[in-house]
Image (cartoon, rainbow, N blue to C red; front, side, top):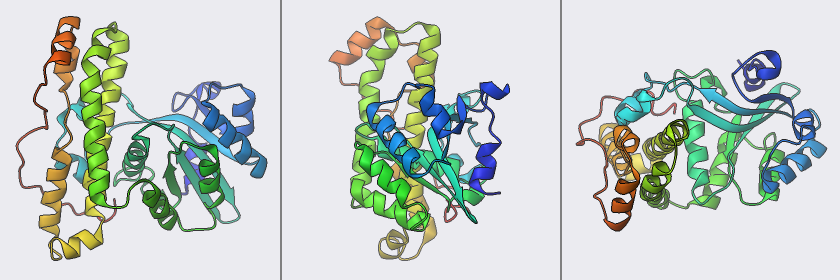
Length: 301
């Protein structure tokens, strides 16, 4: 099933649904005076001017896929403690032209937001997902300037999705090691800021933030694992064509993402936050490395 066909079936509250917060024509969404960052508003407005038939799905929720082999190999158990549909894809712009359909997954810009955009794409198109057959119809972006979002949208039908995604990759990182460095930094930044932010929140708000932290750490692990596994150059030049060695190294790379445990964050108090802000606690990087099970779907992801 093509991407537009799937997305058009997602229901928002206007249709007594809870799949997303809005799904319909981009023009209608902009006319609702939705709260949008200026960069996104400018980009979406320009895209609408170029392609009036564009639709948008906002905050599409998704369950965590426990059966995906890569998720089992990553072994980040806290992600499976999240109930409901905690994985939320921010903005999906989609449109059909003649016999082809495309979607642009847009993540609001921040220092490490493109890594999260990559993670969202890998989760959205992993084996077992309803979008598994749409991986060549989706491109993920996160840019600081509106013109770059518009440019990516303009090229959706001019380039193959994979080629366009790789071109966008090169604007954010040149090597896998560059990507890993940024991902590890992003994880450490969350871990550093979490105690103080969580300690100041009441229960319900704390839960929402804890869920987002867990999602972010999972996305970082996901990117480090999958991006390593799909790199054929690394397979051949570093691991001499040995997929088992590549897989185990990918697992070790994902293990470098430091995090606070789910229970640890729930117990966080103001006193603990103050203490942690003055002491450098050892990073938690998950469980001891183990040989990963065979990943028959890595190439697909």
